[in-house]
Image (cartoon, rainbow, N blue to C red; front, side, top):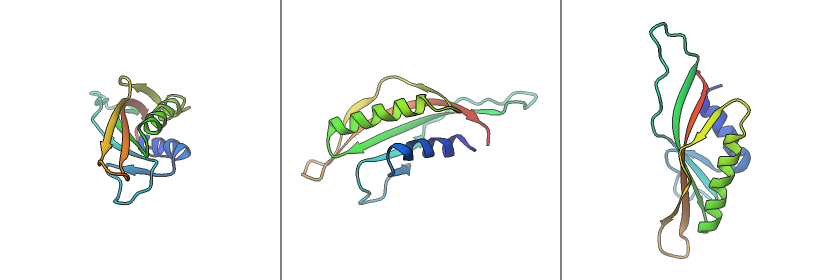
Length: 120
């Protein structure tokens, strides 16, 4: 299985609303949005690496800022405990993102992870 498949499965166990790059309009909260943010190339001259490394940006969205922050913390715990992937958070979560200023506003928290896993 690819890193992405393993990550999405782990995230959906925590929150069923997981989207790649952008959530569709009207997607219910809480929700998680993931996006590639780079990674290290693990190709060698003899082409023997069976690993990949990705940097993955995860955004947690909820109806309140504390709920979004709690969700991203749970994501960190879930990913770091994954039995197959080697996950290294790249710093602490960033909270305080808001999407709108009305009663239907969503609040976000984000974190970037370096993930080593199987080459697909």
